[in-house]
Length: 255
Length: 213
Image 1 (cartoon, each protein chain N blue to C red):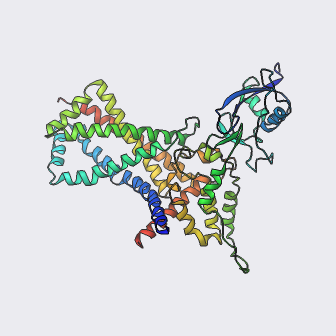
Image 2: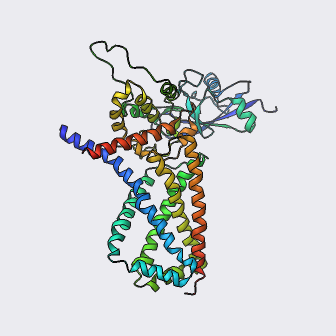
Image 3: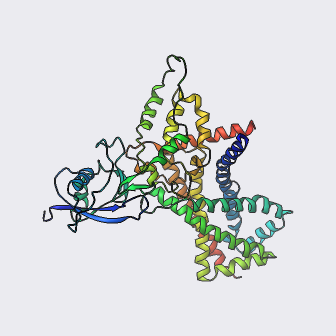
């Protein structure tokens, strides 16, 4: 290998209100690096490709094993976790000369550099009431038994880490529309099939029929393609479509 | 105060119903009308007389204007107006090279093409014509020029694609296609339907272009 370093091309932004700019960094190659360790190298040696000392790149990370979603960013045009984005794979595929392009998630307000405020995701979950209200002043006893098939399906849905990849890729989740985002629906379905959560099923269905709800889905199906956890988003969406239609029909005939 | 809030909430709920009506209208009556319309005009494949007879027959239905406004015009206007609102609120992203993402983009592009085409078609072939002969010449004279033929074909194919892909999204919206494999199957079936309708409409247009009018 002639070139001993690889290139990171990072879209940076100094504060929430300023405009973004691109900056290149050369990172000495070592085997088994990932984007996070490259960004950590920049923190230690905050020198850009022109040899100028700059502010280190701000980013978030936590678990380093693709389960927390904190380090989600757009890498070479695709939303994914920086910790599971392996440098060796990029080099094998495109060669060491080709810069790796790193951007913050575009659908959320940027705080600084690669750090974004993903509050919108949690607002969506809150709007859809994705919880089971069991708090009370006395013990309610054991809950109902969980059907094994439902439990297995529920497990697949529960792996969501609210990283925002699906929302980033969704064409209908943007600053113009009030769509709450694709990540909400697997969680609604997970609680709707839970034997305890089933009791508030109608409340959740009503919540996702409100403004910005499930009707905002445009069937582009990018969400399922980019989901790092391979959550059956489409299945839960289609099932909920059926459920909300039945619920709406019931409401109409009982009007 | 509470009442006002509730009223606002009710208003916000209408969103869902409007979108569902939009989806339903795309198939009933607009999709059905499209198929009916193509079957009617397939008589052009047989010849000028057969085509004239069918158009005559349609024109002689009593109170046809009521059906035209009630079953065709109003649903069309609703579907177009709300549809353009949906197109406006999506942020198409061509950087994701996934099949369904392309379908999503094409659905919106064909929506705009179809809107322009339908308005043109209604104005020149329905509103500005007084007799059966007018209808036939209005169509034939456009299709008999090369540019007119291409533009007409783009308009017809855009409508047909929008309809075929619309069936797929309709079935998802109404919760009928739930399984992954079923979705894949219908994705193929609707595109086969689209290919078939492409061929069908092409033959109709070629036959009209060849007519001695």
